[in-house]
Image 1 (cartoon, rainbow over the protein chains, first blue to last red):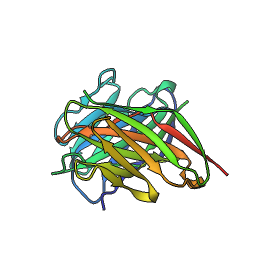
Image 2 (image 1 turned 90 degrees about the vertical axis):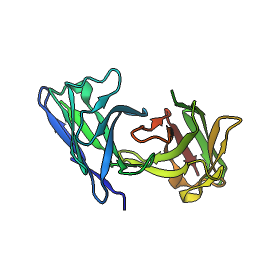
Image 3 (image 1 turned 60 degrees about the vertical axis):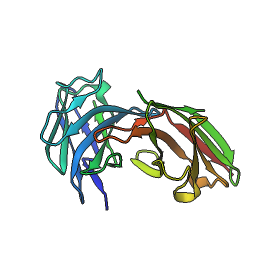
Image 4 (image 1 turned 180 degrees about the horizontal axis):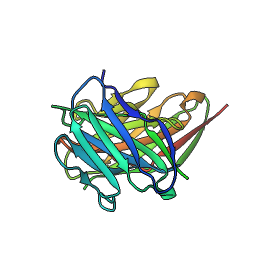
Length: 116
Length: 114
């Protein structure tokens, strides 16, 4: 149980285009989802916290107009990178917290974004 | 605010040797602590977690960690390293509160030589 999927696992896009990444909790309901970003050889940095049915809370320094997060259901959150640039190339990882859980998070496998 | 510090960005051991990866935390409230492993181009796999029960926590693949409040530490150990243990290891902290994200350390790369 407690499986989180991400789609796509790998995407290449041209500079200036937008890319949508999906994060799904497959066998549980996730009231809260988190989006992290990981540059090569670096740690995971929290980008935003997404609560179902409400606006996401972004960390300081993360542009909310560039990284659009939607958490429309208890099993799906999406991250859209708008007008992507090469510096947005990174590994994006989501995690989901099960409804009723206070701390347990389950991580998705990550999405590798390359902007050319 | 919470934070974790992983001492040593790179640790090298020989196969069969003891593995010790260090993690110190900072938290104004009782923390929940985690160790994750990440293989190249993959997501995170939970090794073990401390959630205020037993201070010595056993995880998967022979790893264990001990929570020491007096030292604000949560070091990860394994008695005998395997080649397959070579990976990136992350220590993370959170608190008992809905909606709180994990805060990760910078990570430690473990290399295992034969």
